[in-house]
Image (cartoon, rainbow, N blue to C red):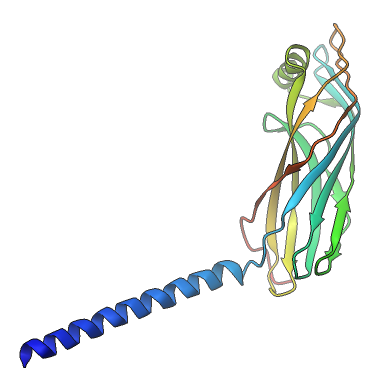
Length: 204
């Protein structure tokens, strides 16, 4: 009789443990998905260079760029606010930040951001200018990073979330000079961007 009771207790404990595990998994899924909503998925479609001049003598950079970022919404509305776009090279910002107007995208809608990124004789770190000029002159291809920062929320959650978007663009420079000034023209890319959702901002 005692053995039967022990087996009954053991079976009950196992069922309780399995039940707690299942509930824990479901709560984890709820916490991840329903408190953050669907993560935005952005694509870098175009990267146009109208002017890109590097001076190693003065350690300055002049740029006139236009990028196109495409976003197709899932089946829920998403609002973007405080979105800024800039370009970096070797983890250093090389263009001024451009602010994107606040945007609401309804379910299944599509939006396209095409900001201009302009900077005239912007001071750069001497090592950065020299490295960039060397990459352009020797390889003719430079990895530039388009970065998008801001906050967003979907219609099914109250909290805003910070986002950090990184898009990789391998830019081919077709026009080069032999002095300290490097120039280029146009590069078309299509790359999926990496989206990070680091933290909740607020409920307003």
